[in-house]
Amino acid sequence: MAYPSIVSALQGVEFPISKRSLTNQIGDREVEVLEGKMMTMREILRACDHDRYESEKDVIACPGIVGKVRHAA
Image (cartoon, rainbow, N blue to C red; front, top):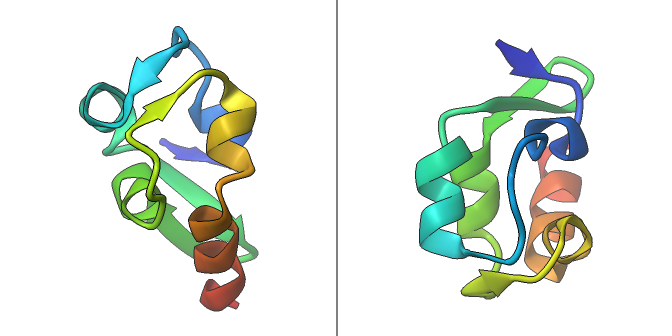
């Protein structure tokens, strides 16, 4: 199943969570980061330097993730 956004791919995740646990839990979920461009959450999370996320906002706002999504364009 492809998710239309990072936010939707994070559904069901309980925060706070470590990067390793988050990757294990949702790493295989595919996200359409741009129209027609798919990435797994594993690929997206690799771009972030954080080892722990206190909330969904921490994932979405990570500068490495923002840059990775922009680079996909």
